[in-house]
Length: 447
Image 1 (cartoon, rainbow, N blue to C red):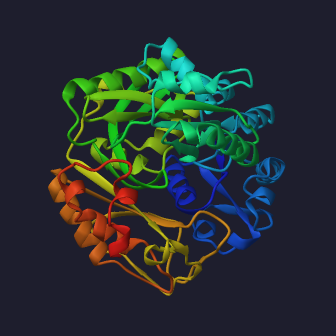
Image 2: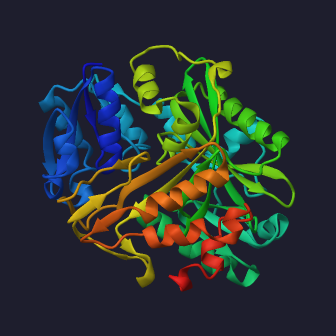
């Protein structure tokens, strides 16, 4: 691997470029016309403008991305997360063009990208799953009888969904048919696939995930993370390791994740996600993400392993240089996603020019922006990830509070006030939080 095209933008593009540089790999940034002056253009070795602001005409335009790789003389493509990162057709196109694809095989992406198929694969691998249909609903199914057998409340999920999208709650039987029809229609519009499936809803569940690295032969885990503080199924705060998980449950999740990846001959970095039910001390598989996660930073902090560097090495054909016994977990890490939104105004977007951006020393900040940069309104509003590492969870919480309180960002509104409120929330501090803590509580009303 000599020259890597980064098929993404923002902080993850900058993150990938820096790890590639440490390995002596040149980097090529792709940018839309709206991102011509983005921070990544000052970090990468070269930049190619690939199209108009709209993502469908630039970052999601497979032909334009491949043309940019050819034009720049790149021999590899790293998709980051989001955009084309879990698009099996794009992965095949990259490989067909004679380029190195930094990710798992297209067949694996396809298998795990269809959530109902992934659940079936988990069942075959002996991984615990939530009660549900185990596959997409068909027109001939007696959904009322099926739903009664699973038990209410339920979730209806898009088979092709991901990133918290394509999920709707069903409280009782009177909501069943209309919600399924609405979810199917939305799935067809957003994902191009109307298929949906049913799954039992676990009240006050925690979202726990296991990070994996594999080279197609060997697979290891790098511990777990808790991503339970969410708004509308979008993660806001993550921490590693997942706190207050019984040892036997933690070990079962880690072992199950490795077993599932190994069964598919997985290559690269991947994450297996679980719902943990504290009341029953049970964890069940929900999906596998065949890419780098936004929250990979906290795993890096507690293990000392550069996940992007390992991705690049594996994609280059090197065997996994780590064994399970090499992985040591040290301390506790927390990540806060900082978005250009006003949480006091129902998270209204806040694009614009950043006049001041000052972070305190001694913490990790992954950002795609500097002071003077412009947050454009066309893409995800995350501007930075603030990461702290400390000996204990309580120390990490205090350190994050201090870091955010000392941060200065002017010219735009940000979600920092929300994070400061979350970090002092009694349920979060005592690890009694869950995936609906933000939506069910008074946190947003107090901002």
